[in-house]
Image (cartoon, helix red, strand yellow):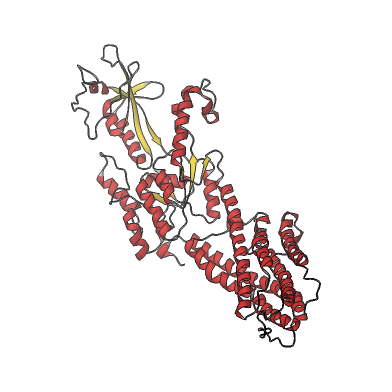
Length: 584
């Protein structure tokens, strides 16, 4: 109730119509007849389940009517009748303010729906094309959520959304004056008997029926507790969850903590509270920088502090205007793929060095390289060669990659890599101990025995023979490690002539060459080149790099075949949403 102008009322159609005796057409005030009331109620009932509907009316205050000195907001209790007596003495001593509610003029029936941003549809399509399942958790009931889900391009048909509300009819926000038969009709039509309803029924459904609750793109009638519990259920089923939410929503703090990765989004500020600082009302409010308005500075500071506190668990906080989710995912995938492949190369090289040295010790041979050479290989060469995956140009097909979940990643990373590792390094592990043993035997005197050396002395092998073999072994292993890092700088992409001629990947070639040259320089610095090596070392030094390259390329092609088959299987699982009705 405004002390200067009049009474502005807002509420449901059944109640506001009892207060109104006329309606506004936009040009004049006419009498509100029974047929008008019937049409208004029909329009209201048709839209209230899918929209936020409210009715607005107005009544001017006359001079002889008692008015308060200040603006007053009257909130009527639930179930209040128009003729009920309510004591309003704190606001209006002497007369009941509710009497002023009669004789109002109906201004209109407003139906409001959330409208998505113009870029959200293309963003969701890009995520789906990148094999990332977009899931929307809605606080609204099922019908309102389906209407919004259809606008952003989600599948909202049968078997495509789940209500997390507990109880039989909680997924409908039915007003107190609604017809129970109408509610039962909507509930019977829209509820899916094959999908669970309520967060407590999700786990039994996953255990006993199918995995459809993990595949649907829309959850309705959600609460912050139900959202966190559903994210926990997804994580229990080996899913990786990234949560994107408003940085100004306090309830999102615990949700950000629950997810594997979180992205805080700074939303657009509402213009109805900040528009008072704008002098020129002809300027579009979207183009106004509210931070420069003096009346808004205190509000902006409070909101900024709220955003910082709510997004403490988030990995990244971005503005809604500057956020390009697909670009972020592309950059993150490029970096994660490079880091993952670099780790694979490093682990493979270190494991090869360890097994190579261990086999020499098992067959009672001296270490294949000296201590200084071993430190060079472990501290300088392997980290240098492991950086080659970062030198490749961005993969144009990176957004079509299906990363899978935790379970598929673990299964594909244990047995497959162990098998291919043994195949790739079998030539070195089998031939190098034999060539070392024969070379030491040839450099020793007649009393030396194969693998055992001179058993009459404590050293068994002379320092001269060990230095010669270790120096040429250092050259061999440096060359093999450099070749391996070049071939596997990308897991599946072949190192063909087109890649060699590409100027953007020149460091992919330069780094392995530097690694091989460093191995030669270390040997030259130790003075081991003054004596020619025995012919077993020469044969291995000339043939083993070719054999290793051939086996590595064959193994990589076979690994690419398995990887491609796994990608097709993952995409088939990703696109199948029918659960127990699916042919898959």
